[in-house]
Image 1 (cartoon, rainbow, N blue to C red):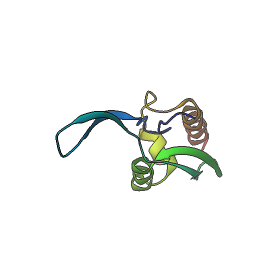
Image 2: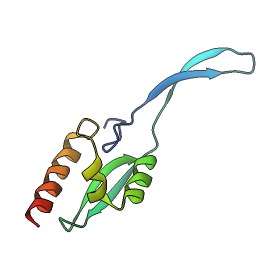
Image 3: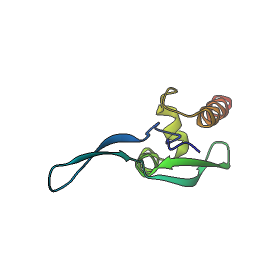
Image 4: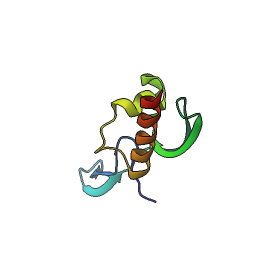
Length: 95
């Protein structure tokens, strides 16, 4: 399972641990990923996604999964999230 957010594409970053003596050793900063189920109002079903806490706050701020997907860039989304976006767009066009 990759350590990458499915909605924002946020992944691990690298940097240094810096000791009191200013010794530097390499380390990784991992994103805060959570397994969540998000409800789509248009489709009337839930989707299980592995997203960062920052992405979860953004989904809430934009007003739900449907509104988030409408503004999301295709390059940032994972393959599964891209399929969800296409389903939502198709259902919105039909309605």
